[in-house]
Amino acid sequence: MALLLHGGRERSHGRVHRYRSAYLRMLPFARDIRHEGAADGVAAWALRYRYRGWNAPELDPVLDAAWALDEIRRAHGDVPVALVGHSMGGRTALRVAGADSVVAVCALAPWTKPNEPVEQLAGRTVLIAHGLLDKMTDPELSFRYAARAKAVTERVAHFDVHDEGHAMLRKSAAWTRLVTGFTLGALGTQPFDPVITNALGQPSPEGLRIPL
Image 1 (cartoon, rainbow, N blue to C red):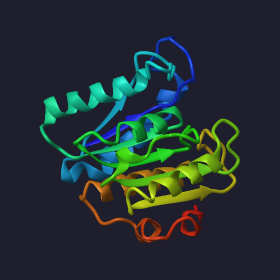
Image 2 (image 1 turned 135 degrees about the vertical axis):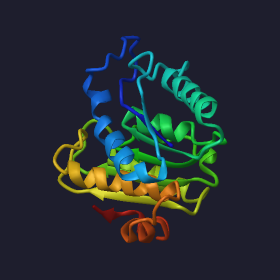
Image 3 (image 1 turned 60 degrees about the vertical axis):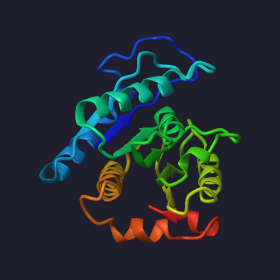
Image 4 (image 1 turned 30 degrees about the vertical axis):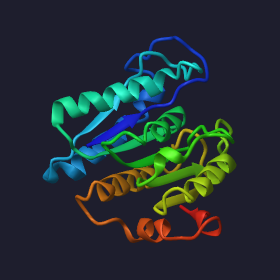
């Protein structure tokens, strides 16, 4: 099972309608995961939060993602879950990674802070990818987060996506291949692509600058 988490804003109680670009951005990933994983029964849920904002200290998307994980368990039983999140959704995915059902996190251009916690990633497989032209979220903070996460779990990969901004549009096919390959590999339905396998085994911090 894959759970996809979209981006948002630092503060907003505006509703997330189905045509909002942050939500629509996750749908091609969901479709590709479903298509490539259909033979193995892999499903993909794309969550729409109640509100657009992170809204500290309430952390509304974190609460919504935890609710969605409970709903997945209720509907499908104790299946392993891979989280895929973009921007604020990447931060949300990393925050809820400690849930019992979560086996992996794929964080795309995640909005991370210098003091972002990593302890919840113990035992998880983590992939972080960030466009180096991103002006919305900081690729350097993603790299630093990956380096700190590597001290908690050995299975961390970090990719620098050259000539790419926050919206993941210039290299959309490469992003989709990376996300689907990682998700299905983490769920055990197919082998990891050798590029991902190699990235997961690289030492920190020098091995966390892999170009995509």
